[in-house]
Amino acid sequence: MIDILNAIVVLLNYIIIPGLSYGSQLALGALGVSFIYAILRFANFSHGEFMSFGAMITILFTWLFQSYGINLGFLPTALLAIPFAILATIALSLVTNRIVFRYYRIKKSPPVAIAMASIGVMFVINAIVRIIIGPNDTKFLDGQKFIIKAKQFKVMTGLNEGLAIKSTQVITILFTIILLSFIFWFLQKTKTGKSMRAFSDNEDLALLSGINPERVVFITWLIVGTLACVAGALYGLDKSYKPFTYLGLVLPIFAAAIVGGIGSPIGAVVGGFVIAFSEIMVTYAYKKFLIYLLPPSLEPSGLVQLLSTDYKFAVSFSILVIVLLVRPAGIFKGKTL
Amino acid sequence: MINLVGKDITAGYGGVDIIKDINLHVNEGEIVVIVGPNGAGKSTAMKSLLGMLKLTSGSVKFSEQNITNMLPQDRVSLGIAFVPQNQNVFTGMTVEENLEMGAFLRYDNIKDTIDQIYELFPILREKRNQSAGELSGGQRQQVAFGRALMTMPKILMLDEPTAGVSPIVMDDLFSRIIEVGKTGVGILMVEQNAKQALNIADRGYVLVNGKNSREGTGQELLNNPEVRKSFLGG
Image (cartoon, rainbow over all chains, first blue to last red; front, top):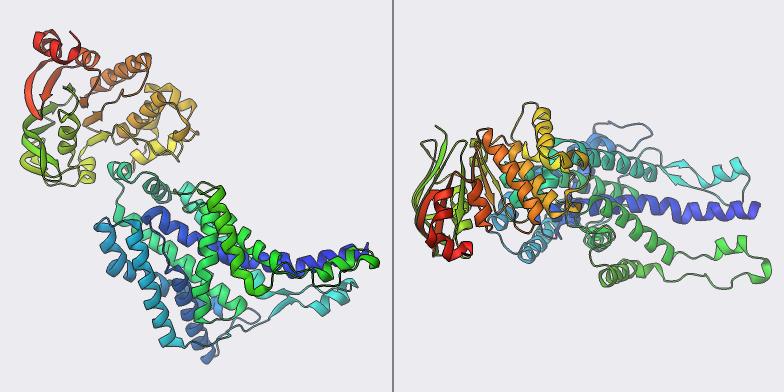
């Protein structure tokens, strides 16, 4: 019985909790990509860099507050910085829209052309970020690091296995729940939200109903800027911030959006968790887990790890390929909000 | 008097003029039908009144106001509504949401108008929470019609409202169109089912090869031997 409990704790500690927080970060990122795709009809490869930019501004404001001695006690100071970073990221997305994406939209360029332009935007923002903050690893988490430490947990429960819950994991999950509930409420219940769904459903008919496309596009960038900033800041807070990791993050984010059905918000969220859990489950070494469950005679000699963690991205890529082959429209048949 | 007048309109796609010097008008409370053989430019004529394509020459006036260069969405706020032939509903949204979107520009209470539309099309009340994409062709047409009526238009344009529906549904739709016309809305429609459409029409235009070929009351056109021979099937 104790063994089973220990095995469950191992699973919680190494797969479920990290999966939930990484999945939340991917879900927020994928939701941003989906929004752009559903309204503006192109794949925005620069989304990872919007996240990176948001995280960078969060760090800069965190440093500023720290230098004034402002903090939130046991909570990370970054939480105080995020609202400012959201405003900055929204400003960046509106400026990019004005000088790059708007031109292609009015010219009615094919989606591939706009996607290529977004790759250019990606490199430019990446360069700007590295000029400002440098290419190195930055840790900006302060306050209380753990909600439950492994040792505390062992003492509390008397189990062999410890369960560590980082405050960033809980913050990530809470932020995601709040943001997602707000966005789904907004899309389903408000007039503006419905008009965005209408625009993504049938652009011509939306015009015939008097829906102003400029306004829909503006609100889309507001939402996308917010989502990107929060996703980026939470990812940086949870792992540590390094500009180049955000270039790599574009792959699992797109995998998540496409697996769920690109353009579908619920699909983006589900896709985020599918990708996160697959990455973690395929690269986790199950030896410890199995030792608790199997009789000693069957104890595994190897690590029981399907793939080394270096192949993390291969997992999201494989899932992406499989989904495109089997169900190209994604789990939730994307395209419209 | 409220009316929509297209004067000497020449327009087309990509530099090729499809309609040449066409004159059309529709007054409030009137049902006007545009008929003609395939490729005569019927839909093009209607779309040019709505501003969905740029005119090479000619003008469009709404109650004496020149709207030739106005964007289609701005014409909507003047009171000109349009029901396209295809993709005329928001398939991913419920019937009621479709109606709400029709009233996007309105800030007054839209509840009464929604009720009126449910009275006109009782089936929509039943299906109000179903997504429009799941409805049958005739029901979709009613949703499309309802969405346009939600704007409280003064002039309503219908592009082949009965395309692809069964004869029973067609009769039903035509009787609703008459009801709407009685409320004072001016209706301009393009129809393939010319005979039935001219039957309910106050006036009709016959377009051939992008030009006005004939006009008159519905009955006049129906009884005209030439019109009968050319495309009413004798």
